[in-house]
Length: 149
Image 1 (cartoon, rainbow, N blue to C red):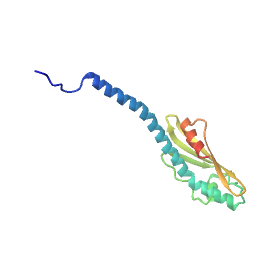
Image 2 (cartoon, rainbow, N blue to C red):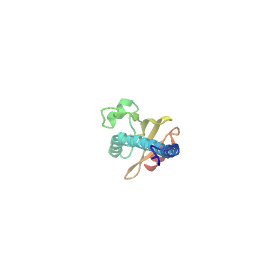
Image 3 (cartoon, rainbow, N blue to C red):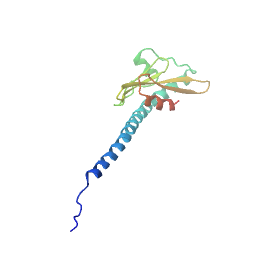
Image 4 (cartoon, rainbow, N blue to C red):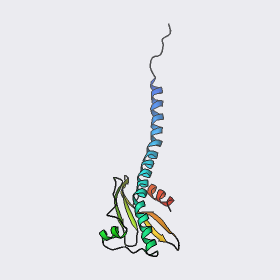
């Protein structure tokens, strides 16, 4: 009498494990890139109110951006009550006297914290922003930030 096979053979199980391993090897780095992109997008939304305030300041002062050198006065000269609220992704925001915004992105990847700077460029009739990532930032951060320019 013929015996009916019950269960899977060892070869079949090994093939399934190999396929899962290959899929994981491709999916995990892509997932980490998506997480980093999401964190960086929060930088843009965290500084957007500051960009608007600095643009208004430049417009009201004839295209000249010269803010107070005192930290508390920088925020009041921009019409803000104080330092913008930070999040778990954006741990610090600072504005220089020339209107350069520096946002600190906490743990962009395993490399640790990373600074992203937004520099205003005042034209005759417009204000544009040049965005750059610090040299210590992971490559993915620099790639994403370069697209904002």
